Amino acid sequence: MTTYTSRWLVCDTARPDARIRLVCFPHAGGSASFYRAWSQSLTEVEVHAVQYPGRADRLDEEPPNDLVRLATDIADALEPLADLPLAFFGHSLGAPVALETARALQHRGIRIEHLFASGSRDAPLPVLPGPEEDPAQLLVDLVRMGGTDAEMAADPIFQEVVMPYLIADGRMFHNYAMAPEPLLNCPVTTIVGDQDDDTDLRPWSALSTAPVQEAGVSGNHFYLIDNPPYALLKKALSAPRTDSC
Image 1: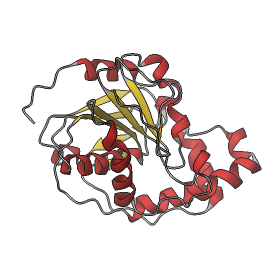
Image 2: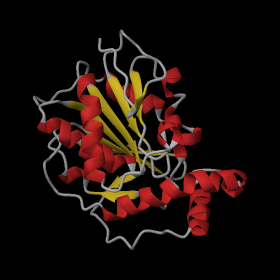
Image 3: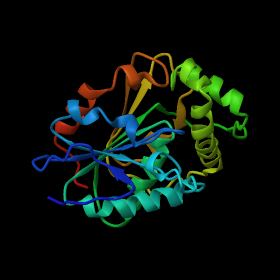
């Protein structure tokens, strides 16, 4: 079992006997702390959360501005952890970051067991408008989507600390031009809230040679704050891979 520390990854509970590592990628404006409680429920896996630059203990760094480069840097950090199988969970912005990180690791011969694309639906890529950079509107949208409550969003300290990297993350996402290849060779599960009007749209069924399925859950874009999909993850991660990749 690898003992490893990195500014890119946070692991609150090491599990030397785990069969698999689940790597969690935050949403725009999110940090590794979003997944802090997950290891308490996902006791059969070792949970690692990605810490993007520009927030939390990396607040003194510049936020990322190139999604593919970000993914390559994350892949560098994850490569030493590939002594165990890796599965990815990415929410919203985290879904395409997980996609590009999986591509980077596959190129190095490292197999990904499963990719969970949360807040993302299997659909053709839309034509996106320019990124929203008005702080007031971003806060309105964040509260509407359930990403934070109105009281927190109104806190001047929250606005001063979070808004710069929330704006930067949005700009990075809108500047990202997804290439159709290389294809993944791992199963993909998209997870979509039944009240989510802000779903990331991405042609997942054309991005992997393995099966792609969609799981519907109750809630809005941030359904996983109140109802993390633990049962779905446990079931999928305990099932044996049937492909030959």
